[in-house]
Length: 186
Length: 150
Image (tube, rainbow over all chains, first blue to last red; front, side, top):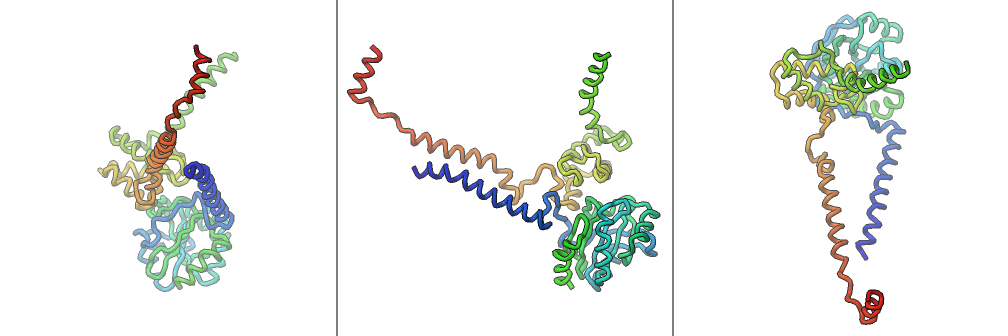
């Protein structure tokens, strides 16, 4: 008789467990802390891959991973892949300008973009970047494990990637996720 | 006229899957057919990160095309299948494998059929053991049986 009660209780228990799990997932999706299509970055806790990219106007100089490390040593730094043809990049641009205004150094990489189009984009929407490089073939982006634009990486003072955000950095993402990390790694 | 149209539609439907599979255009392919076949086999096991349930061989996404090209470069350079896959896993993580590796995290996933079978076996065994043979007929029942079946 005990085992029959077990048989009745087991599906109920499994259903309850599943229900709680889905409830939490949906809650996370509403708050933006859980993305079912999101991928964990293989770069978290590591230094960025080696690269050396040419300049993208209006920046006079391109940069390499060594330049990036040197700059990050002074202040945690945000590396942002963008493109003039990318709609969410326009969406996050205001936020990047605000972060730059708040003192966060942001370095940009134009991904698979025409040099002229990228320069126009910056001129039209403002320049939040300290330096901009061009990755026209998108090959360095693959070394980063990038799968779309925009994508942003936060480097701490030792040059280690602490956070990766795939998609637009909205005001919500900036205040909920980026700001606490900036305080932690300041 | 209608029949001709019907035949054309049928042909289109029958040929469509073949066309859909031929994402890689000839310019992408390696000149050596053996190497090309190996590259395709590796690519079919790699996930396109943009359209996540397609392999890079099946996907029409820009990134998938770049990754197909890299797979072919590495195959042509003499990398083993594991080296090519490892190169991508280093960059995109284990998620890039369409067939997940057996790790402590994926153990439940891989072992779930065995676990389900074992659980079912335990229940079946328990149910069978509980089903004791029926008690012998009482004299009254035997009399009734004889009455029914002379």
